[in-house]
Length: 96
Length: 488
Image 1 (cartoon, helix red, strand yellow):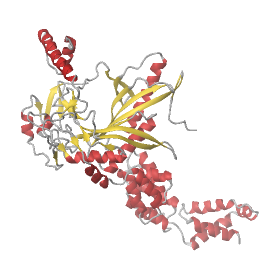
Image 2 (spheres, rainbow over the protein chains, first blue to last red):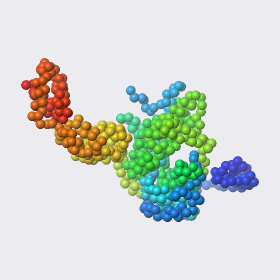
Image 3 (tube, rainbow over the protein chains, first blue to last red):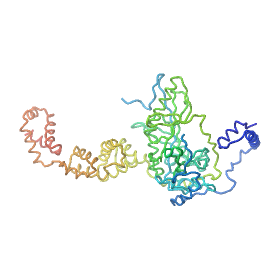
């Protein structure tokens, strides 16, 4: 097995996802299968193949630096905040 | 005697070398943020400069700011670096309330700029090349405020998404002075290029320092990273403290733990922020929302044409155009505002005199009140009028310094002060003759000393005239008259 429960736990923690023991076991198996498949892919010789960054043959679009300042409605932006105080978003106290 | 540079730490077991690499975060001067239509301006009300993307609302996608790319290219050229024709934006993943998307868009393996350098002056004649590994573009995070309520942290997303250039040096710096000089120079280059305003109080320029120590010829030691140094003074203090801390630990037989540390400006000490075990695992991967950034040669060429005069070029021009010596040229070219002040002041005047007044008088006074030249109570125009009064003989150089002191406090015009205090130079030969006659009459002893060949007593006579005139007599005329009278 490429991915054991310890690794799965870490991945879940980094993604802030809570898993039951059963899920940890299942995901470990699933993830291992995926990695195994990747290992198979690695066997293909791609020495002369350019990495594909995107399937669309288009260029990166750029926006102009023109100030439309405050074009967004602040009250709408704050409307979906789970918690706010005045014009601040608030979260449970975090101090690193 | 000054200590040999670079400074080393002298411990019980001998001398230790310091190895420093710096990461500087410089905010790109632009109207809008890196990937959104949110305003990048500073000092707005909380959460006023937001676009939908900046708070991570679903369905929003990043579109890169064209001008920010140009600014990064311009900075790269100013830092003698290579502009890469192909670069990639990656996601740096971590959770923090001031980062609504759960990732920062940054550049990891393929940055927009690589392999530059800055030459720093280490003494009058020698410079040292500090290599720059890379400059990449990334988004700034929001700001958390912890002291508004006992239960909650308040978040202001105005900064979120603002474009930063992270500029990473190689570990080529060998003491805190070099580190300070490097950041000073880097800041000036970016300010001259007009790509970052360099305002450290407003956080437009922040530094992280990687510091380790080793015995000469040993391999690199374990490094610690000191985060978020917001002034050059603090950067230097933090490095000096950290290097000494590491030497003390190693000499008492302990090991250095690789960790991230914070500098407390009040105590002057660094302390642990997080250990290696707690280090973030950022899981970088290419951002699927953004295509590779391709930059054509003609774009680079066009931008290179717009590159303004940089500090090194200005320094050379000051030497050739104004005939300044290397020291003066270096000091005057160190800051954009100083150079501007100098060029205004020397317009129609002697450049050497202008440089002298700035370096010997103005800087001293400004340092005394901890102000920069752009905040000087005496403008270049006002100081120019003072110099004109010296040059046309209205006041002596000595009186000018007195007037200058007064101008610094009252911010009055030189002429006003001279009139108020009656400081005008006495150049009237009749008036001075009368004084000299009086002094000669009353001081036979000194007159005889002069006649016996003691010419040094001349100075005493001049001093007497100056005393009686409160220093306002024209020294050239005083000398001439005393000599004439004594030789009679």
